[in-house]
Image 1 (tube, rainbow, N blue to C red):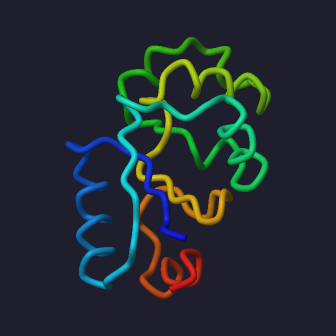
Image 2: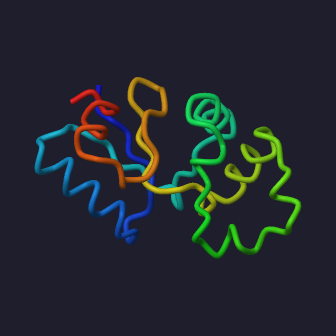
Amino acid sequence: MAIQVYGIPNCSTCKKALQWLDSHSVDYEFINTKVQPPSQAAIADWIETLGAKPMRNTSGKSYRALGEEKKSWSDAQWAEAFAQDAMLLKRPLFVKNGKAVLVGFRAKEDDIREKLGI
C-alpha cells in the first residue's frame, strides 16, 4: 500500500518531501488538504498516535489567529480545530496502512526511512 502524504502543493516542505520520496522510488499518494481535508475521526486517530502538539502548524496564520485558550485545549478540541481548518496541521503528514507515522520533514534521513518503513 502506498504511503499517503497530506499537505498542500505550494508548501516548500511538502515539495521537499515529495522530491525525496520520488528520488527514493517510494510509492505515495499526495492528498491536498485544502481540497480534501481529512475527517475529524482520522485526525483523532493521528493524534492518538503522534499527539496533538507535534501536529500543530505553529508558524501559520491560522494558528496565530487562535486565542490564548489554545494553550489549554484538549486533544479532542485540537482534533475539532484541525478538522475545521486543515491549515492548522503541520505539513506534510505521512500515513501508512491507516496510521500516522510522521509529521513534518526535518528528521534525520535514517529516522525518516525507519518511520516510513523504507
